[in-house]
Image (cartoon, rainbow, N blue to C red; front, top):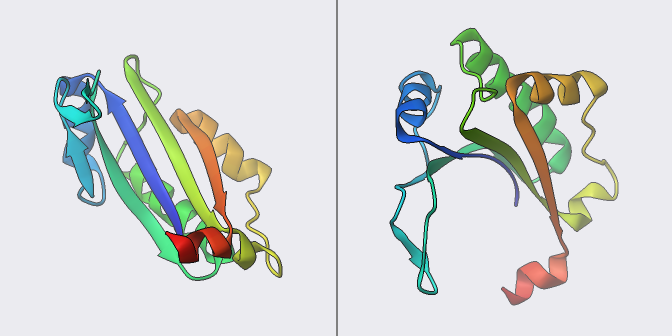
Length: 131
């Protein structure tokens, strides 16, 4: 399955103000100092929001555009100090062979203007079957 997630971390007051106007509830939240496994703790508070999930990767860009447009209409931005936002694309490599995922220059500009970096992970079908 192909997914687009928004991961945001930073200071508590700013995160709270973002969560109040975000179009969807977070899939996962954590607080600064909470354990995150392997005897480590979170250095910042944060959350993850699932933006889109689709069998075909070429569906993701339109869903990402819609979600970010809704965020913009609500006044959500991630370009403020002490906030880090990342759009995480997790792709099944076999789904991109016939119809690749295309992000336009306008898409990249919107991400930049909103203060969102991009992270891309591609998984092969073999790795997905063995997981």
